[in-house]
Amino acid sequence: MLVTPKVNIAKTSWLLSSFLSVFLLGSSVKAATIANWHFDSNRNHLNFTTDENVQPKVQLLANPTRLVIDLPGVNLGYPQVSQKVGLVTKEVRIQQLNADTTRILITLAPGYTFDPAQVKLQEQSPNSWSLQLPQPIRLAISQPITPEVATNQSSTTPTVTDSNLFAGVVPMHSSMKVLEPQIKTLMARYGFLKTGMFFLDLDTGDYLDIGGDRVFPAASTIKLPILIAFFQDLDAGKVTLDEMLTMRRDLVTNGSGVMQYQRVGKKYTALETINKMVTISDNTATNMIIDRLGGAARLNQRFRSWGLKDTVIRHLLADLRGTNTTSSQDMARVLALLVNDKLVSSTSKEQALDILRRTTIHTLLPAGLGKGAVIANKTGDIGFLIGDAGFVTMPSGKRYLAAIFVKRPYKDVRGRDFIRQVSHLVYDYLNQPNPVATVNSPDSATR
Image 1: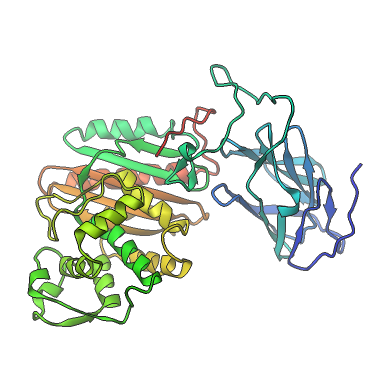
Image 2: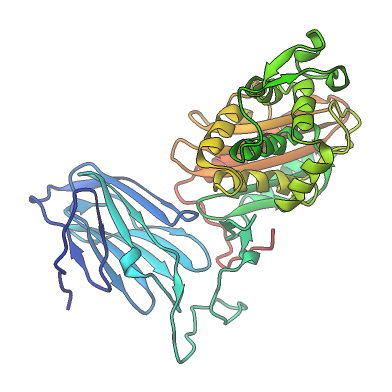
């Protein structure tokens, strides 16, 4: 029997009491339809909106644990839809329960549950709600619980460990098995190119990894981790945005940028310098920031502390011979740590992303995105090597990481065309309502 607890229901939020169903009180509900819904597995967060006022009813069911959100008076208007999530939070499903009710069902793997006191439903408006879930916890059981197991899969209860997390923060799910053959067909057409790429859906944990650990010359993508290192020092009080940096002769270099054409000894604020370093990829500005942060050796040590295995500064810019190195996985790792607030404060994160969104070269990853997509990215080009790494937000709210490098015949435009086509294929794949890999079982790897 379901019991309605005595609770004070604030206008904006309430907590789910232990294994009880909570009924929100209000006026009668009009017939409504689901306008949109979105589950962010990285944050354990659900948003849903209807075109009329709703009164959700929430309950927690056991064996296996399922969080049920019923929407009385809401008509789904389309067939049942499910989103595969991961190892522990298995699935989010939305379906028509009966003629008058739409149901959203969040299912955990056997052996796991939520602390119901930590489940928080928040009213954004009368027809828009958000549901914040806590991290799932293991049940204390005397007998082992056998999870649902597909043929040839392990019979152990799934657990989330660091080996299932990309950069220690993003739960890995399944490789994009449907997309991978399309990418490899494209690679065969451009067989004279050498490439490595890594893409990661931050909402589902699905990923595309083709040579993501291959080491390439970093070119100007090295400016991405340098930018984040600057904001780390800003948060620590070691640098300020308005401090003046002097353009010394030993830091002036050729290649991209305009500062090289100014008189030696000219002063710039640190903010102006990091902006030029990223937005117009100014090499002289980069050398000034490397110098201000203590030099290449100290930055390399910091990169290693972030878990970057391949990212090394061996030479000041312009490094036209390609001695500075990185990999697609390393670039994606930096971005994953950044967007998950693991390297810098939220304020510094937003400042860094704002700078990255204002880069002026849009011929690589940005060229393959759909209308309305936003990318915060940094490109690199030293003639025989081009690369791009970015954080993409789609109009639907879906977010993913993208990183790709291509070795090509010197300045061959076909390298650029290849990156654009890869970007387009990945974007179209992730732009499906709920892209799901053909393999149901997670095949994640340590990243």
